Length: 254
Image (cartoon, rainbow, N blue to C red; front, side, top):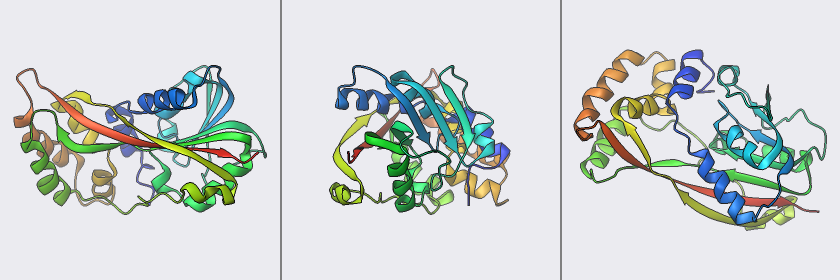
């Protein structure tokens, strides 16, 4: 199931997702000691373009691809960026077309082996493949009781749908056309109002899986979330939520 194909899910994603991608791109820039922009980048699983806009800061031009027309219809415009519908496992580009490929918050939805073959085909020799994820740690700064609500009530009501959490690559990738360069970790705490946090939750596949299958109405979901989480927010209606991510750095064998 493509959890982000429907118009309503794409609208909620565009409205509710915080920008965590810029922190990952900043970490890559520091890790690789980038001093000049890449010429041509491909951002795979770009969604509404948050990752594509972030990587445009270190590239002359970027193509963002996604299988969801709904998500692409909400993609952020940028003078360096073009978008098109494409499958991660069957990229419609010539061999040796890009010097950088990025995948942000999407690798767990791919057929990872098939994608890595395609990534190796369209990358130039010595081109970079940078894959990063980001996750909400279930923690709210200075509100320890929030974690118990999230893990015992929220996740029981809206469990994680099936996904490929284990990434299909490691240091042995040199034999598969890539050299594994290393990893890094980044953290990015995000301050949100109660309404913004609820909008974020309704953009998650946990809730999309229920709503798009007709098991729940989004209006009921939003009301339950607002009623359940309001008590955790301060007098100014703001709370800080802890996010973290991992980044994997690979280069195509020259």
